[in-house]
Amino acid sequence: MGAYVTYEHEYILILRKGGLRKYSKSETEIRRNSAFFWEERNVWFSDVWDLKGERQIFKDVGASRERTAAFPLDFAYRLVNMFSIKGDTVLDPFLGTGTTSLAALLSSRNSIGYDVDQGILEIARNKLLGAVNVSSKILQNRLQSHIDFVSDRKKQKKEIAHKNKHYGFPVVTSQETELTFESVDSSLEREHFFLKASYSRFNLQNSSKK
Image (cartoon, rainbow, N blue to C red; front, side, top):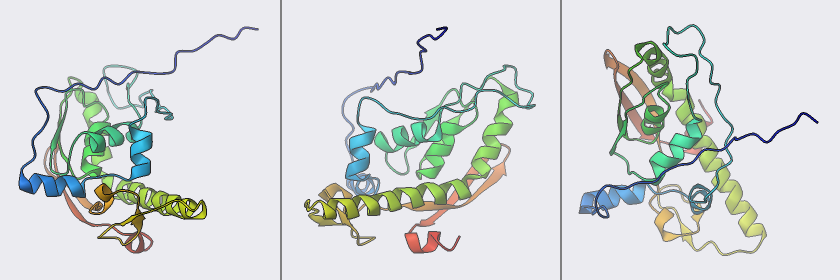
């Protein structure tokens, strides 16, 4: 038939240097604000992710290679949120098109990235400078998905025992009660390839006006 099996999956290696992280009192509060929804946890911490791939071919950027090796934003966004808290610094020694740094920026984390290919850095720079519109879309989708999840759960007569203190909507676990979202208000270049972002509390009402 001319058909053949393709190898279309990759592995994620989860490694830790040293023992378990110990949080200070202030970090513990930040950790609670950095939580994620119960239904997100069930998907993110599963052993198989089904994500659509990214375009791999460069278009006239002067890069030294033909393919980007880029991965989807959702891929990096999940990992950043799963294994760090707001204010942490994420290091990407293979910056490429800047997807990991963008995920960190969208998640209120700092990031440092570098790459041997100078030609590709302009893509990363433009991606980070355009973070404002991406931020509102991601947070809108996360909050709306949770509201839809709560609605379906109520229809199924399943218990929702807690309430988020900042947004007022029901949540399944106590870990979600202090979860907050910050949207990117601006992403400005202070120096060449040194960007600084500003944030504000995000909610569904504000996002509908943008």
